Image (cartoon, rainbow, N blue to C red; front, top):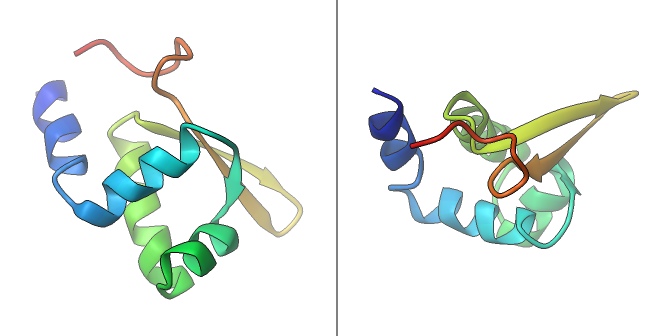
Length: 79
């Protein structure tokens, strides 16, 4: 079941772009929305899918939510 969730999460072009960005640095949801040219609620939905699949990790700091990739850092579950 885990591989299905991972593949489903990566089947969207926007989520692939988010993962490429997160592979290089930690970013806030608002920063991702700006870079992607999409609304913050839409990006948050994509982020939730990536986090639920174990591909990204959230960190809250005040009212900001920062994201980083969980792939290749020992955080992502094995396929």
